[in-house]
Amino acid sequence: MQLEALSVLSSDDITQIHEATLELLEECGVQIGSARMLELLAGRGVAVDSERGVARFPRACVEDALGLIPPRFDVFDREGQPAFVLGDGVPKIAAGHNAVFWVDSDTGETRPSRVADVELFARICEALPSIDMIGIPVMPQDVADPAASLIYGVKACIENSRKPIFFSTDQPAVNRTVIAMLAAAFKGDLAGQPYGISQLSPTSPLFWEGSVLEALIETVEADVPLAILPEPNAGVSAPYSLAGLLTVNNVECLSGLVMAQLVRPGAKVLYANSWTTTDMRTGYALVGSAETTACRIAGAQLARFYHVPSHTTAPNSDNHAHDEQNAWEKALSLFCAVGAGNDLIVNCGMFATGMTCSHEQLVMDEEMAAFARRIATGIAVDRASIAQDLIREIGPHGTGYLTAPHTLERLAGDEYLEPRVSVRGPRALWEAGGSKDSYRMAQDKVREYAREPAPPPLDARRSARLEEVLASFGTAPPR
Image (tube, rainbow, N blue to C red; front, side, top):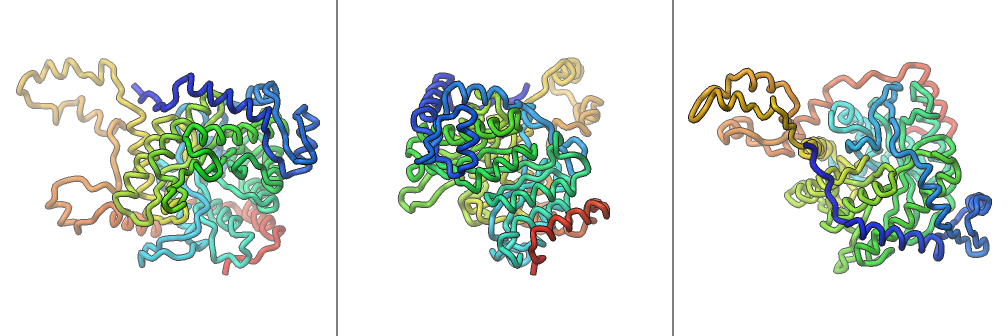
């Protein structure tokens, strides 16, 4: 039986948050920084205060728009092959995204990130079975034009992996370029065959910047799925109470989901969240706290209530080192995100409140993801797995389980997870192998992946089209 979805909200809790959200959307509204969007909303029956730039969404408008959202959709890889389905009840794991710093595998020092780091990151993602999608892990710092940093990160991922791409930018020109890059590299048709998913965020509290709305319109019109990801900070840009934090996130997220449907009815969207709480002693925003993890569960519940695929961030840690705190914050945040049934979970390879990446962290996080998904899969119970006849045959104090056909038949099955960088076995064997901890084993794995051949490259025609898109942006290649 599969693990029952984790929950922290009752049905009454969800109803209260939903009703408060509808009242806030209708009576308070959200500020809209785009004249184009205000005009579009006014034409769709939304109450618009042009002087203040505020849009108030009637209850009926919100309910109608939510009813148009596809509850599930297919996602494809670079070669046009089906990769997975979002909304089918099986959480998908993505690596990345948008950090700044990198932990060097050779020196162990934290340094500015490079395009080469992203290239190897993508190659490792290609090889790791529990990574379903690649978020752009960093904004590479060796790009001559800082405005093109994300673009070269996307290029590195496209060229070094066939897996689908997850990206985020609030700059319309960059957003257009990335979508054009996906279209150039994709061996299919982006219209109806998603190869990439975009993420866009309002500015808390209750404000949508003009550049973000421009990107929202263009993304939806291009039929690229869009995750609406508010980032309210408890006590700073949202109430300090967790219910208040959930409500601000819900208002902002629903306003984005509704706008997407008003631009293009039936647009593929995700109910997303990236909660932060605040350490009021330091003013530091936290992503790995117990409270943010509880909210990840609540976010999945709210998304199910609206019948919309969900996205959250995990595994997350606020620590700057690979230590026990890093491990427990990451393990809890990822397991709860998976156990709650979030459809897309993004952030493998990152730590230090999402500011730093490493190849080793990616390898360890992927193993953590495999553990979390294995636990959530549960235990298969049927006549064959109960093995009542075998138990009777061997009887009390009997022997034979080790060589029984029942055991041998299952050795190649998927009931038991085979880890790659977990320490297992007697101490003597561990010491004979160099007494390596999981981090050092992950380092060895990274070196193995670096020596392996890259995945099949883009063909000449698609590669040329990709270069044409880059040239049209008018930026110099990395230094």
